[in-house]
Amino acid sequence: MNEQTPTILWLRRDLRLGDHPALRAACARGGPVIPVFILDDGVEALGAAPKWRLGLSLETLGKALARAGSRLVLRRGDAHEVLKSLVAKTGAGAVYWSRLYDPASIERDKAIKADLTATGVDARSFAGHLLFEPWTVETKTGGYYKVYTPMWNAVRGRDVATPEAAPKHIPVPENWPESEELSDWQMGAAMQRGAEVCLPHQQIGEVRAQARLADFVDDAIGGYSEARNLPGVEGTSGLSENLTLGEISPRQCWHAGQRARHEGAKGAETWLKELVWREFAYHLMYHTPHILTDNWRREWDSFAWNEDASHPHVVAWQQGRTGVPFVDAAMREMYVTGRMHNRARMIVASYLTKHLMTHWKIGQRWFEDCLTDWDPASNAMGWQWAAGSGPDAAPYFRVFNPETQLKKFDPDGVYSRRWIAEGQISPARTAISYFEAIPRRWRMTAEDTYPAPVVALDEGRKRALAAYQARGF
Image 1: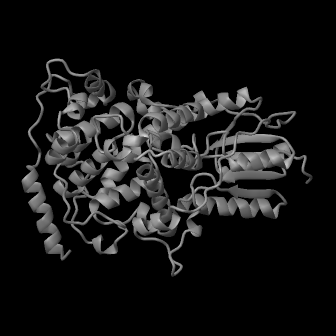
Image 2: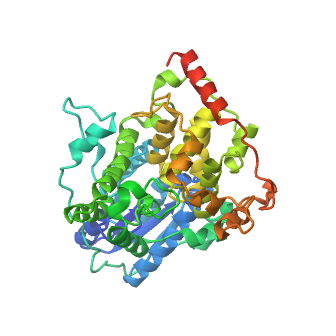
Image 3: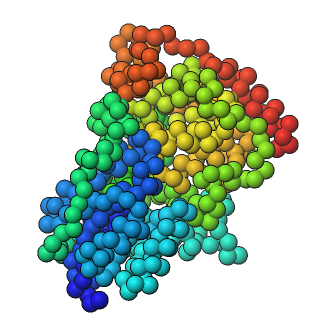
């Protein structure tokens, strides 16, 4: 096969045109480039919110490719079989893609690469989803980092390649392979009425992600170190939804943060550390994939967590009706916006796993269904960090008090009033929106009486500490 044969660009979580190594390599190869997205079993299995948000991103990317004179081909089925079929149909001599790092994707991609290579197809994977490939970051003794701070110290001075612009020209084939219609996939079906409520809070696609980054660097990065902990203010970049789908690259974020740091922005280094915290999550998922499904620290395997997701306390947590304002406000924020403030994520995770003594897997699965910025590595590490069962975890005896945390980080009650309508004479529009987003079967209204705590905070803390002591931690 010569260099003029088509290249299939298999898109996954790299839904952008700028700083896209696989796309640039495909264009540089010389033949037509056929961008393809495959709705396989992994995509089908996504939770309601991340699947819906992915569909929005695909729609936006399709329009961006059309403006560039190209198009996005959509296919449903087993990725291996779909790619082989497309190679046969188009005469493609190459299939390129950006790497993923979860164990299921690694196993699938290795099999596809081996099979295509054996038939003479140039099958290659490229970086692009991370700053540093996980196998390139090692301790001095050659192992992987189990603690974040040493990893940060190891990579903070590393060179990160300068982001590359989008290709000026994407070569197209004379005849395009058939494509399915995105609307037929019904990727937002499971969101039901929540989609309409959640949509205005999304910043979809590459252009809006870049604008969001520019606004953050211009207006907010200087105060990020303090503001990031205040859920009642817009103190974070909000880029998590864009990073998880690859609508923006981590290299673009890194270099923007470094420029701000060199210009004297006080919060820039703290933000860069958060980018590396994301890298740490992927580093751990790659080297210890059991973090996705099992306790990272095996000594927690026999701990007596509640594993009944239908327990009334768990249901109250899911519905934002625990009677603890910080927890309930955070859960309601998630239903309305698809995201949750990071300080709030720590509080709701600590509350579920410690005050309610419920297994982190239940919370992990709930977030997996409800977050538009869901990320497999960050979600798993975050839950295990809060529960105490993970690497670099919060000490098991640290039981966040949601009441004192709210007084410290939301002293004027802005956050709780924004999301909790019960008891307010004139609730905020955001608080009312919660009742428009949730399932009707919950039978909740803004006129309900706000509940008393399902577990007294002191009681929950003492119970957790006693359980840890009895277990020998």
